Length: 278
Image 1 (tube, rainbow, N blue to C red):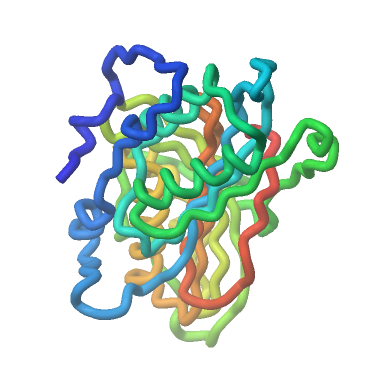
Image 2 (cartoon, one colour; image 1 turned 30 degrees about the vertical axis):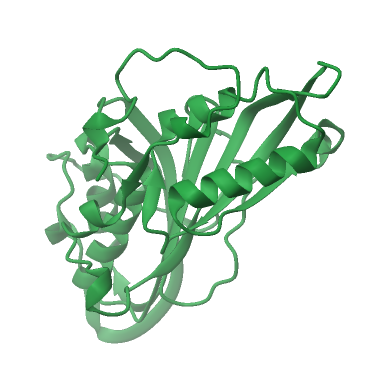
């Protein structure tokens, strides 16, 4: 079983420029889900979702040796048994740099097969070619901005006890958003920056407590996917909404951004709009 400390993170790595799928480093999701009391073999998970990866530094050679570039989008189901550590993902993508391929379809086939094998479930991959770059849209997650609140912060680790909801006055439906999410890489401690959106139906969540809770991730070490699942479970348990969706858009590192989405009701596919900080 691979563990994060065995990954390429925090270690000097020689870049391979010829196709090397063995560079991908899977890590079992269940290792962290155990901490949250989520046991896949004990019944239905309390959420479904996807992780949307965007790769902006993807290049290969055509059969005549001319470089080609594209942006790749990979959609990974949240019920896949593994995540793939992001530095290994970067090293894998860079292994195409001097690899000759018959065309974009040949690249797509390799990406789909290798990533599906690494994540342990079918991964959907699309390529955006340079002639379509101009059509890529940007946009921010919608919702009531929590960051407007003038709160005093005295702790920088996740504290679920800060979360509460008004169970006396019926249910509301609202969407809340914050740009103040920051966590740190589980292995290296390097900062990860993100915007988070919480959409729910249920007792009205106390916004000041929620903002303090989210800021509490500022010195917390976990991978992106794990942070979003922790937020989902803490809000679900403490505030007891009947419907809940949590979506985070993280800034890129090494040419990759990772955008996890978890929900317990159907809201449609989350938008893959690049935010201003991405």
